[in-house]
Image (cartoon, rainbow, N blue to C red; front, side):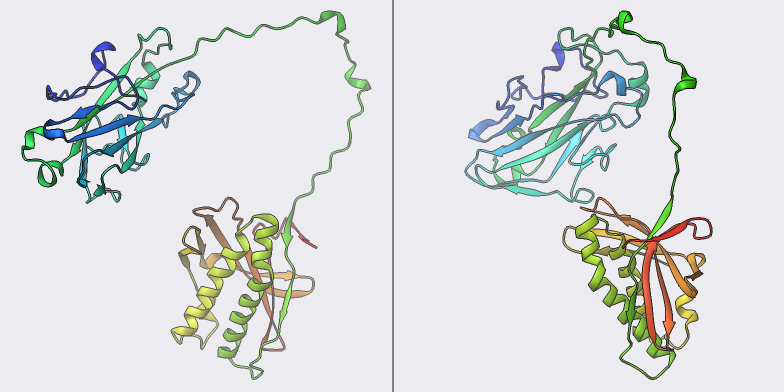
Length: 381
């Protein structure tokens, strides 16, 4: 994506606005593309990236998109406030983040979180740009090559709003900056690969003489260690049972949660324990912990902000609360779905299993979520 003279390439505009004679467009990088009277000007700088472009082999993808950017630099001695942008072709071009603002014609603070912004003297602001042609155009459009630019090209004016007459200009007509975004279909010319003959070294084989190894597939669900939690509240009651369960979940997270992340990069244990702990303590804080049925009828889908840069979602449905016979004991299992958010690559679905021991103590472990009737459970240690 670059800034060029549209007349040189017969670029198509869905609507062609009037261009002020004081404004001009250049093919040179880091050139002043928009200049006004009275010494106030804005530099628009293009960012060229090698290898950009929509490859021919990907033209049938509806999500084909190319990206670039331009930089607004305040070369005035006073601050400038950019309050918005206006696109003439929002179907094919968008700003800031793809695909959040495809189809947006007027960018303003009501819908764009990055607006408005103020540039101090000599301060720069990079604006990301995106070219996303229509699916029909990708399917039936005409492509060109680097040396033969005869294919389809598209363009959109970007008007920078408005700010300048209010803050730094005496004459409003002298401050109407706008630039042009362009996109085109380019394909590399590559010849067809040729097979290399090597007939003299070819040896035919008898498939009956080949001894294939016996292949044994083993599928299993990974069980983590069991924690035997001793409840400090030794007198049995339903409320003390809730207190013991919350203590067991918290202790398990302290022993295995962060360790599992550091060893395996998997946030599944942390997400599952976080959700169940939030459910149990929430029931206790609402003083609804006089019956276990409150917990066993739970359905929750919740978003967690683990830190300023890490977040995830975890959920449980009532039909995913199960009973399981394991090694001679009966466990209750909460089969939890986890979804990774920002800065998390791996987040598996886990089941939190627990059972009551000595009326108030809790045994707890986690296992990969699966079909426990047909899949084997195997210990991690």
